[in-house]
Image (cartoon, rainbow, N blue to C red; front, side, top):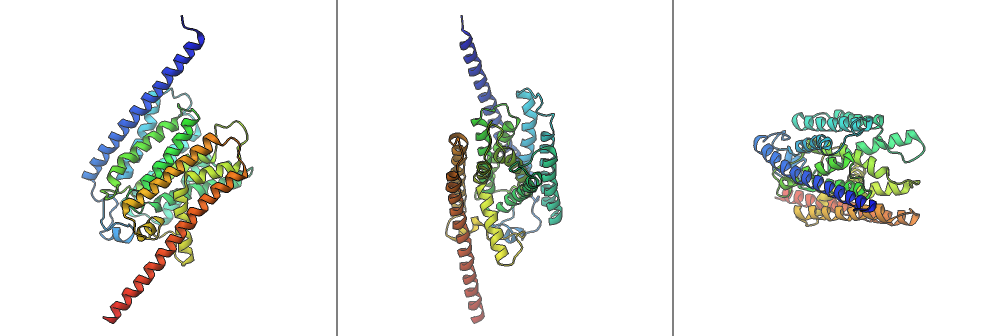
Length: 385
């Protein structure tokens, strides 16, 4: 005869194994599906995202134009994950709340504007307006940063965050494997936050697993030398998705019962999204100092500076992969081991961020100076001959 305690233990054991089986099965099936659908797109969509033969040499690091179809699989896997949740778990109120509707609408908008930009080269103002609309939908639906007591400031910060991340992910898509690798790190961070807090029936968890699988399936075709790009279809969807996930699981902490330190949440968000934040900060600063528009594509990103220093494209991707892994460990440390946040932690993580910022800023400035000298030298040689 089993005791009450033994029955409870058995129920927990069966439940844990059920979760493991569900997520593992869904993960494997999603990767296979992502691989197959990207193979299909690569075969039949040869021109999406290729506006003219010179696009690859003007904006992208690579010299070959390739179809930008990878982002379509991201949205398909996202929708598949949403649909699968009701199959594996009891939907309860998961689908019947404003946050879920806001998430769906903002993801749809990000995907559509990205697809339109790949197909028709939309105006920058229209893209910016849609990004603002994504942020507005999130705010209205209840997905917003709650860092201070000022509602207006929180809303402004939410808009800045969503628009900033959507542009950061788009700007970071400049070299084979970079955006997919960085996004993988952020998605894994969010998954770990949910798992560490034992929220295994969260609808967001299965969505994150679906997007993780989509990224892995795409990365097979996007790793150097790549066969396809994700295009704005992928970067705009990912930017909106990661922006929303960042608000819900980095800027906010739904699992701590006591008061959450704003410095902790700010640090968690920065460490989780450190690579897109660093790249955008460095690029925008350098371009403004040179009197250039920060919204025009160029080959002056942190990834490019590493290549100018002698690293191959694969090595650059591995550097960003390593930094993403470091980011994962930092998020685990903050979420799992820091019980009470103090100024010491703020200072230590700030030193790490500023060290990377200085390194990348110095590397880009040094690379730009070297390229300028080389260009002037070539120009003098041409005049002499």
